[in-house]
Image (tube, rainbow, N blue to C red; front, side, top):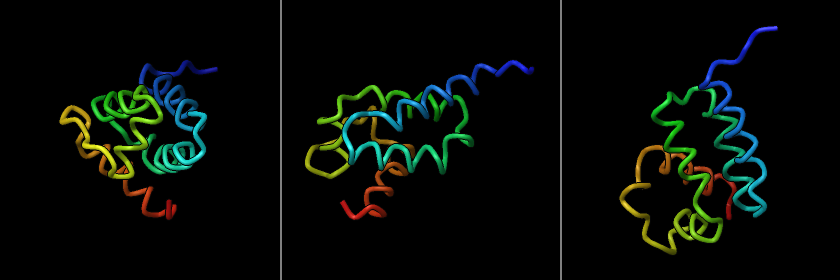
Length: 91
């Protein structure tokens, strides 16, 4: 049996967290993003995705839906790709 690299372990944890946020709309958005992009994220982008996973549901949902201003620290290409899944799900 082969051992997982550090980034593979981080990706598996991020996938689990993305699929089980507990807020249905966010589960759909984050899980769709993770399925499409997680295995290709480098360490830096994975860190940014993990940071988004740590934001409380109500807050990130407001950002994704455009109801609240996204703080500069989170407003990057990873967040932009995540938001593209909002449009695909017609929320």
